[in-house]
Length: 283
Image (cartoon, rainbow, N blue to C red; front, side, top):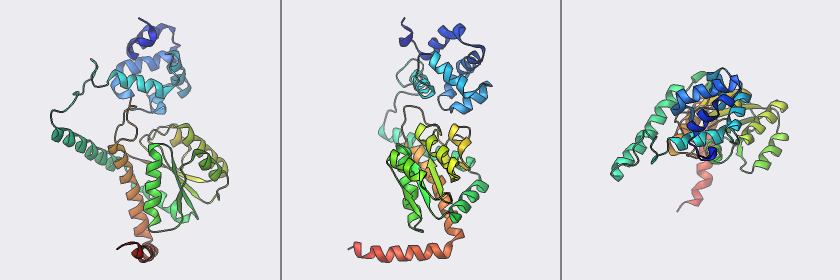
């Protein structure tokens, strides 16, 4: 069989003795824990294997894959519904059953987020927002939607939040941003090239950053001042699932509620002013 057409686990076994000693440690872990690896970050996998992130990247390339994300996609394909490897039911018999399953996944994501939430870090994030003259909410793809939601939510109580969707404008804005400002970056994986570029540039300029992510151990987390974690495991075939979005909304709302509590008077004034201004737009 052509190696490219092999199942990913068979491909690992076929190339095992061509790997370096360090790469074999990665292979051994993947073969033993493959059902969980598709939900891990490259940093987390490297740590579990006692290897460097560069070793994990080389391991992926040795399998003729472009990188870690491509590897996770192949691994997710191994467990995709309809394959002989899948441990999940292909479908539910009724619409009501599927709706209940979807709802339960969202409920689980909320519970996971509540367990991961660190109140001290929420407090630190609020303090950074309070001290900043401007707060820029950023992300890419589905995470950009969450950045826009965050900026919209806070715009109801203060005027220093903004967001930019274009990747080039994001970089140019950070390059000229007041170093006293704060960036809130949304990145479920914590491993997108655009997000890392933003965080590296912010660090160079002394701009403080808040990261909302699934993974504490990720390249983006290493570059962020405060890391706020959300729940919900998302496979590489899901691009901003509802449970993952809801989990991030729970994090946003926790920061928002704490900010409003600490700045009650100014927030109430803003709400009243906005309500008055918008009243003419309603019948």
